[in-house]
Image (tube, rainbow, N blue to C red; front, side):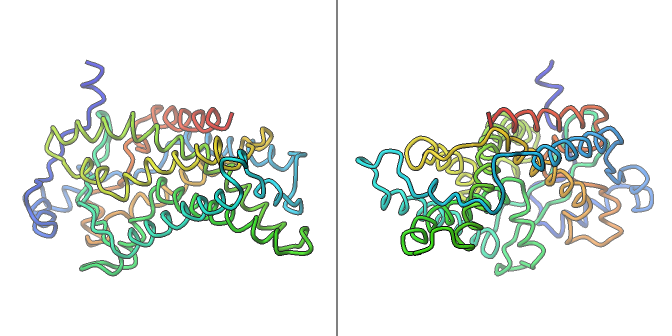
Length: 340
């Protein structure tokens, strides 16, 4: 019974129709738009307790970081990136090459997603009790593909996974070039090296917990949800998760971080900076709330209103009452636990 209660709701979007005809048919076959708006429209405005939770945590995290005595942006951390954990087995030159290799893979994947991706059209489904209507197809189209636009390309990289994946790529790029800059810079405390090393360490403290969060959520939440959705006639979610790009971002992300922790540089996670990743998570929650009416740009304003607010993650649904806040709290706790 519990498994059934957590299954995604059966939605009324046929799968075999083309994107344009399915959207038109769904709007036409249901009640008129004015009536459909009354029946299905929910603006998805977050409940007061979820807003209070995020504001409260942001205030606590910002205060904690401001009070942190460990370092400032003027500290030079370049030596942390210029050491190899096992120099006899993996000398620094190899460590640098592996880091830059990870960065190259990530940047190529982000470029493909932004400009060239043509994912299976994704339809959001929601848990029982949601007041949201299962979405029309979300069109993931790279900017340079047929029917692609700047906005459709942006949607391809607007998930928590993809944004974190981009930051991980920037981290590995910086971690790879910092030893080279330090080696060829006669003044190792130069402004450039100092600022870049601080930025790299900040990114490390963000992407490490987030990489573990992404893999855990995808494995134990999104995959079971997508499998159940496929049984109910919505194969788009499992098709999206099975695409090469998402598979890379959901698996190589944590593999690369684990290699950095255990084989490459053994970079530390400063305990007094535990708030970095949760603060980043709170920022994405605010971003997700702001995007709730922006995932279906192919529809007219009237049609978007008839569908109502949409979220690409079912646990970000703002219409689940107190479960909305419990979900956010659980996600923040996982980020905190991943740091420690």
